[in-house]
Length: 115
Image (cartoon, rainbow, N blue to C red; front, side, top):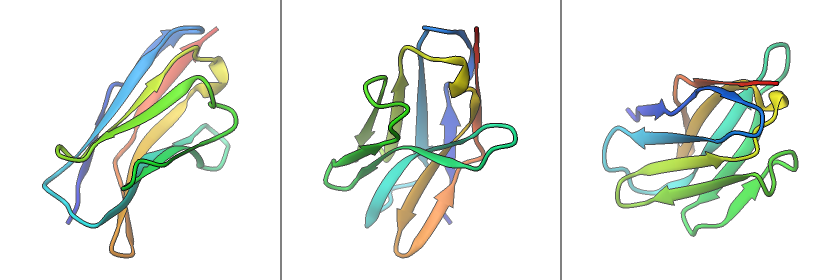
């Protein structure tokens, strides 16, 4: 069973930065992608950013140019550097990992951006 543990959420003022990190529970092979989704109150969960095993990335249009996803394959970690944060970035951010036809999720970490 894959477990994902997130860290780095918190409260920040608009324009500030946060860095989220996610560590997988053990050495895992055959990872298709790792990434981050978010869900704001009353809204559906949405993709923030994802990075595949080859290093290719995709981002939501709303975060392009502000957020950067990175991955350390040796440590099975994925990080999300979030700059120029906006109040509309406020949400629970969840780490995700896909391998062997299954998708795994972390418990989520709250990010709150005050105006």
